Each structure stands twice: as C-alpha cells, then as structure tokens.
Image (cartoon, rainbow, N blue to C red):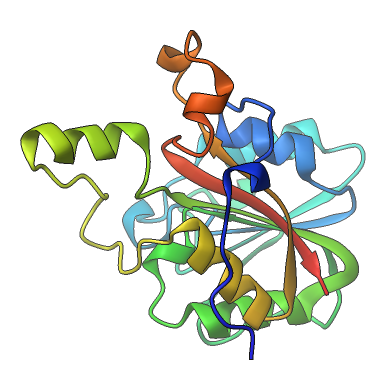
Length: 212
C-alpha cells in the first residue's frame, strides 16, 4: 500500500518556469513521443492546437510526434500520426512503445485517472518519461482571490479532480511511476519575488515521472 505521500517545499525544482511548453521542451526525451489531448479534448471540437504544431516542428529531425484525442482533427492532413479514442478505455499502441508521453491539462478531466495512468505506464518504455501538468489549486492568485473575495477559481466545469501536489505524487506511485521532478508555472508578474517565497505557488503543477 502506497499511502499518502507528502510534498515539501524542498521537493520543488528551484528553476523558475514561466511556460508549460518550456517545461516540456526542457524535459522530453527524443524518439517516439505521444501528445495526449493534443487537439483540445472535449473542448477542442477538432480544432488544431498551435502548441502541438510548434512542438512537432521543433522536434521534426529527431523524433516522431503522435497524437491521441477524443475526436479527429478537422485538418487531418496536418496530423499524420493521429489516433482517436478514450484514454480511460485504452491506448491503441503496443507495449513499451513511447520514449515520452505528454499530458497537457488532461488528468483533471478524467473520471478514472488510475486506469488512464496504467495505460500510459503500459505504453511507455522502461526508460521513458511521463510529463504532465494540471491546474494548481494552491496557486498564489487562487488563494488570494478566495482569501479576499471568497471567489473560487479552479477552472471550467469539465474539471472533475483538482490535484494537489501530494495526491498527484500518490496516484503516480500507485500506478507504477516515480516522481522525478515537480515545479509550477509562474506568472512573469512574480519575477521580483524571491524564489523561496513563491516556490510551489504557480498556476499549474508540472511533473516529470518515470517507471519504477
């Protein structure tokens, strides 16, 4: 039994990150890469996400970028390695196929995140990396809004689970992953605030994990 795994300030990386895309670029592993939810999931309506195409262009000479989402994109010709399905059912890929799997604001939408992470574990190589990000309920701006206005700001109604750092670490451990790195996406407005005061208080939790 894994139990509840605590997170402390020292567990966060000291590097300041102002973009989830930068976090992906700094931590992905070359090879076969899967971007899950790459056309926006239930909110995307088949439209292209610019970040997917930007990433595909940057890694074109070293890696192959695959996509997986609930529906097919409108501009199918721009997605040569796209597959459709529900992550909570299964991934249509063979075991130990991917070097990197990226979940960009996906986990908070799932009814069965454990099943989804188990499928990711199955299709990820033994030395591969899982990179994911979710909204951070403990972000400084969210805490201040609630403190002074009693206003909750935890995202759109399709967000089913609000992951805390420790609950995220715990479910990763329960599905066979080891947390390697955790950080949060900071606003550039906080550049003047010392790092020890702002650490862990960005808008999104971002993690890198590997198979145990």
